[in-house]
Image 1 (cartoon, rainbow, N blue to C red):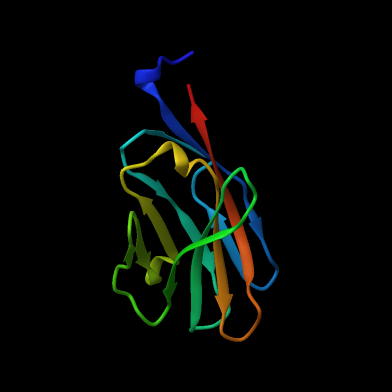
Image 2 (cartoon, one colour):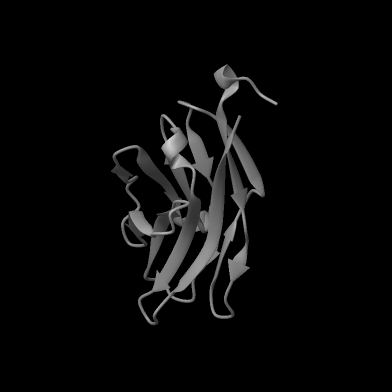
Length: 132
């Protein structure tokens, strides 16, 4: 058992994919010390040149919350509050970084892909669990 001073976060990842496109997490679990940055990796395969990538958060209460998105035609790094994206189109990857992690960040995180040609695929959830 960890003391209160070692309070941290753990992110568990579950993989999911579709037949026409795929979204997969690059780690199976991440441990994060509170107030440190956490980076969640996501690799994908899109069937078209133009697409959108999204990150969502689902806390234990169950509601799904949109965090941030990236358009494939815009390779500038995007930031929304404590959330930032590292989009590498040539490597088919998009990493979400949460700066200054907090206990309230405990949730399931989803990386999702939507091609411009179809309705999209919701991919890989990430579950963050508090450690004590």
